[in-house]
Length: 575
Image (tube, rainbow, N blue to C red; front, side):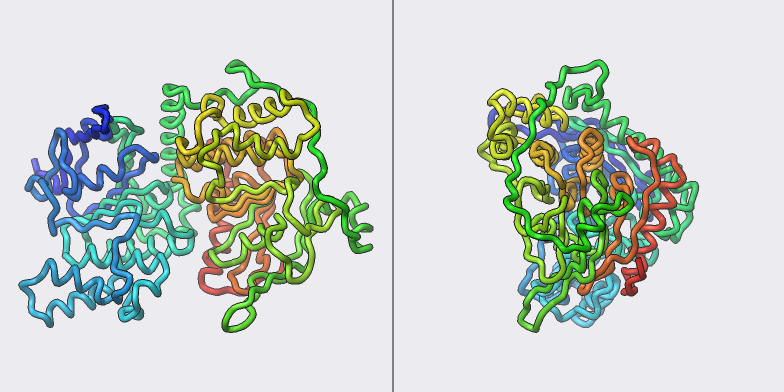
């Protein structure tokens, strides 16, 4: 029997804290990788993915088991393994060429200077950075820096390239470009690659096999899926591939079931239905006070249109334009934004980085001055921020020394000043229960995970009973598996409130899952609305049922094609 190229047998790693407590991270993990294979490892946050990469790299000792590469036991770092982590460790004051040459000189000291120069240039060309070879790292984007990190890892001519979520901190467009670079490296180099990722689509786009790492503590490989999809794989075409959709649905269902089973065992979630389960406090029948002040006079045309039941007029953008001053002159970020929303409508706003999505959102929240045009909410100009417009940002803005309950209470105290103490407490507890934090509402925010902090942010926003809910990539900092949890929480709570909502996102699936309409933005500067897609899917929406609906993949392909078109600088189409 042929020995596998990379073999992990009974790999076990435990950590001991200062008090002597032992936490098992990996327990009895077994895995084999063939020479030239591209293996993707999917796992939840905290499942031990980075520990596994560190063990493969020889950076940490094992407590039991062994890892072998080409028949040799790994007992420390070696040039046979190139490693790319999520956070790149580069010299920002040096050029691209100098950063890569450091690795080349360290590993290939026996080569002549001419040979090392040639290898440096070839490696930089391999990652598509020849045009920026002389530029300092401090002058490069995050995506370009990550390419340098990949080049440096490849410079040693390793037998295996290990990549620990190298793209997770990048925006969707940059991430797509780096995925294409990784695929090009795979096809040219035929190198063995192990990629740790939290993105199912990324794994399906790149890998030959996908291994699912179970949830910790004591994680092992739960299941391995073969990716039998022909190469080259075009992300805009894969939605039409039955093999892709079938396998994607199978993996998503497996991860969802695994997450649900773990949550049930840990008692981490509550029954959010009206059936059997924990008793959820009732929401008191109280109304928030109006803190918006005296309304400004609106245009006569607006007031006349607002009387028409056939016209969306609860939230209106008219001729919206935003210009920022810069050292080189005025920069128009967005212009000619015209959009109407019905009361209770959910709109997703999607587009590439720099298209002005967040700028539109902050103007809508009253946090950013409008250059030209206007925004009206429920018959009033938007001129300032207020609790009638609740905002949830990508980074949860909580007071770390306060508990989850106290963070939510701050807003509730302000918008319900006439309510009794008991009524205000019931509002806070109702929404914390709804977002699955019934057992953690009295924990300090500093002790909560990022996902739990964002749940507090959602509870705080809904507890204000706002007229408008504004979400600015609220799950963008979370791994895709935690993001699914939070999307489901958002859907459940929104179904009960039906508050008018705008959600800025770069996640195509998220945009379709949540929205009644997906508004697609052209590239900036001078970004506009390029297209509006009506999502005709029944509510309430269930993720598993959605993935089996052919309309979902048709919508998905429409959005992906639009984004691909504007990736190459297309112009706006008429709305």
